[in-house]
Each structure stands twice: as structure tokens, then as C-alpha cells.
Image (cartoon, rainbow over all chains, first blue to last red; front, top):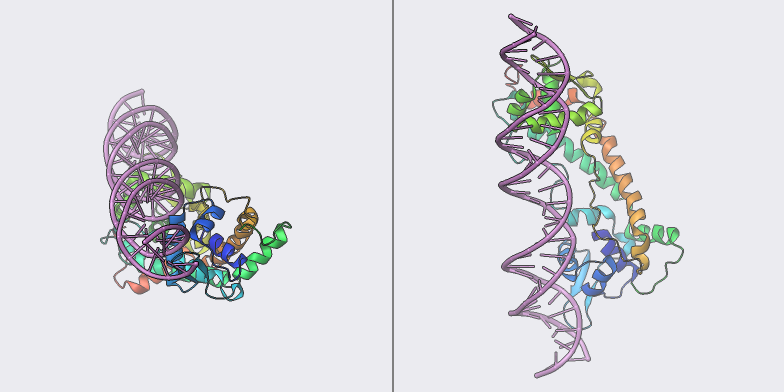
Length: 140
Length: 140
DNA sequence: GAATATGTAACTGTTGTTATTACATAAAAG
DNA sequence: CTTTTATGTAATAACAACAGTTACATATTC
């Protein structure tokens, strides 16, 4: 969903868009969008201003924002399940498996992020326009 | 958790282990383990027999099972969130973004799996033994 | 000062995962 | 053949994560 919001922002290059408008595009609630924008603000991906006639816009050009940044801004937790209960330390395997797997999974996540780095928001926009002929700068 | 169970099985190379014993190692319930084993059976990663003195064991040597196979056997759903509500089709971005992002994410997931393929169960065992000096074939 | 839009809290609902209990069934052991 | 053992599976509960909703204070522009 984060990518969707950013794509809309990229679509309106430069223009400020309100959370209400973004929410309408994603078909969700403005509050959800605002919470998402907070994460994106922390990552310096969007700039938001309060008050009348304001809203959010990208803080960089769409060609200089890749999806790995978006992923990191939004996904705060590990994609791999961390078991709630601790492993049985009496078991020789359970004793040290956690940190071993963490290393392996970190490597896998890294590989994924390197792949996401190859796609920028501008690239996403381009793909959308290619897939959808009727995509011109209109309603948002 | 799936990797943990398989690691224990790899640890006991060849020996059949009951779900109760595996559950004790992972510190969870035998039923959880059995459900997990069902997925692993479907993926032909483990062999399970019923009855007294039975249990599960790897169907291949630990060196010939990589973590990408385990991942595919266990993770049936996409790691990326699919929004519950449909995107607003009136929005030119929302209209075609779904399939565009699906392609990008599929590529990222593929990159991750290719990385996981580089690690076998035997490799995991090796790392555990290296990290934990006191790992000998004991209680399970 | 009025209008507008964000920041944020509180609460609900849904979904997915883990956990627990219970029981039928299959296979081995005696 | 009967007993024992262990899996397969259903029903249910506990729980966390996430999306949604309402409500309101605050900041900014006009």
C-alpha cells in the first residue's frame, strides 16, 4: 500500500496531495494514509505540511527513490517469523539456532532489497503507463 | 520454526523422531509440529510413518535440502501485503498498479529464494556447531 | 478568526498464527 | 489379536498484527 501512495504522489510530480485525496485513490481511510505518511516522513521520502491547501509530496524526484527505501521505511519488523516462545535451551540445536538463522535470513532479506533497489518509483510509473494505456494525469 | 524442526531432524541423521520429541525441542505443541510436518511431507522433504516406535525423518540428506525449498514448502502466501480492499479503479494509478507491483515483488521474492538456495540444512548444522561448541548428538 | 488539513488517541473488526484439547486411525510390538 | 504408540485432524481459544473508524487537538493558510 505504501508503494501505491507513493506512486500517486509520483504521478502528481511536485503537487501537494491531501491524505483525503490519497485515501480516495487507495480506497481506504485518510487516517491510514496519514499513519503511513508518518513513516515515510521519518525516512525523508515525503514532505508534509499542515494547514489549508497543503498536503504531502515527494521530497525527491521519483527517479531517485527506489523500492528498497520504501520497503525499509515501512516494514519495521522482520518478514520471517520469530517464534513467540524461546527455543528449548536444553536441546543442542535449539540453543544456538536463533542467531544462526538470523544471519541466514538477514542475507536473504538483503538479496531481496538489492533487487528492490533496481526499481525506482519512476520505473513503477513507467510500467503502469505501459500496462495501462489510459493513464494520463487526471483525477489522482 | 520449520527450519528449526528440520535442523533437529538433520541433527539426528536418519533416525526417526516423534512429533512429541520435536515439539519438546522447539518448545511448542506436538500438534503444531505435526501440521508443519504435513507441509514438509507434501514437499517431499520428510518421510513420516505412523505407529509405535515411528516418527519422521528427512527424505534426503541434509546437504541436498536447501532453505529455499523449505521456504516454499512452508510459506504458502505472499510475504507482501495484498490490500483487502480493491484499489479505486477510477484512479489511473490504482487501476493497474496491482499487477505491476506483483511483478516487481515476484522478482524480489525470487532474488530472496535464490539467496536461500545457497544454504543447505547441512550448512545450517555446520554453522550451529561452529557457533555452539557444545553441540554433540545428545538429547535432541 | 474561519477554514482546512495533519497528528494522534481510542476503539472495533478481521485475519493469521500459535496453542490446547480431544479423538479417530494406522502401524508396530507383544 | 490386543495393546501400545504415534500420527492425522477437527474444534476451539488466545493472541498479535493490521486495517478501519470516529473523534478531537493543533498547526497553517486565507
